[in-house]
Image 1: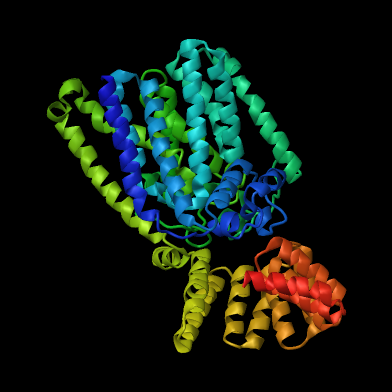
Image 2: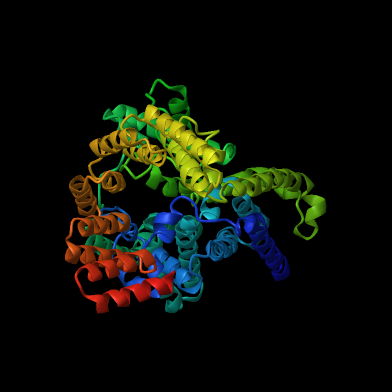
Length: 607
């Protein structure tokens, strides 16, 4: 395999990566893109916010007080993107596509280094299948999942630099490798799996003894320690907030350990099934979409047998078949983080969670397709001597590619995603909830025809009601259904739902703030004041609650306090003209016309 052929392989992977996802360039923000970018007041400060990003948790800028995630490098890059191209999702989507193309090139180099140039075709076909796999659409088409792309790119680069160090003995490669691994951790904490991948790779492909591999790999504990210390400093503990909502992780809907374990094992089987047959793909697999199971369930037993067989094959084939051993080991090491067996995480299942692990699957798939014909293959005449394996790979590639491009369309915006997926995840409480949100926020609010608008809101109420039926203590669904009733001027029903939302989650700041708005409209100012105070206590950065509380205080004649809270709202949303206008009105009511005029002028400049 000469350099020209290797360059051709690399070019094919890069071009194909771009081609597959080029249709996402005109897409908007979707799902967590809002909490991480669009509505994140720290990220929207651009470069000026980066210092604060490293001091706070992942969703602090969205108003969450507690969290278990710390990914400052990823957020800093989002802040830089916002600085250069504010509120331009197309640019962020372009960065995701470029990073995916770069990642596929890095994976090809990584596999080539491990397998050797004599198996360049296997390295290429493995990477090709990874590049094309439809289960990756959530990662590439969803801007937020840049954290996955960045973390894996940095981790693979770290290993490549380590391999260069082993060849050249140049310490600059070793030091650079350690630094890149540290950056990967600050991009996404799941990179910690490469602490195991690194010695595993050294033992398997570089003939290291276990002790030698561990000794060399121990240097990577330095950036891990730095990350853990930073994480503990910001989150207050290594684990951060340990409260996980049932709606996020269905395993927590039962306290029976056996059922939790059985269901977790079944979910592991679902990951393999989705890799083997990626249809249908959905953005949500939460409560009720995946049912709780026990060890009498055939799907649990089948999954258990398959994973036990993988572990047995890993041991049995150790060094006898390095490629399959690598494929199984790489898959198991990376999926282990998301099993919910060792520790409970913030979700029970997600297509994005198998992104890194899927490389092991793709290597195994390419190996089993190519190996039966390997002896008859001539590298200089591939099209003649490798017709059958290339035809099989070609068929899979076409199917994968078609599915990937078609699935990308669903990620255009929230409503498109929700309305597409609700057909397949109709049993998911959160899927119904999101569909209701899409109907109300994406469609109804932009609708000019009043009758059509009201019908869309009624439809959203049906979706929220379905979500509540599936999960009776779903606080957010009650809160949003209450807002839908409010917009239909059904105040009693709205207030009843707001109270239910707060009953099931006293920390639901949105429901408390909306309740305050309802009281304010009904001129129950003291009740409004109490509701807004509760919302601000839960979330001091809730900009609507701050502004509405300020309005309530002004209405009650407390103009000085009103100014204080309007200024807090301005700090979070400095481009909102109405806040400056209301500060001006408050100063005017205090008799300070000079200050009032300054704020009136600022408000006018923003309109």
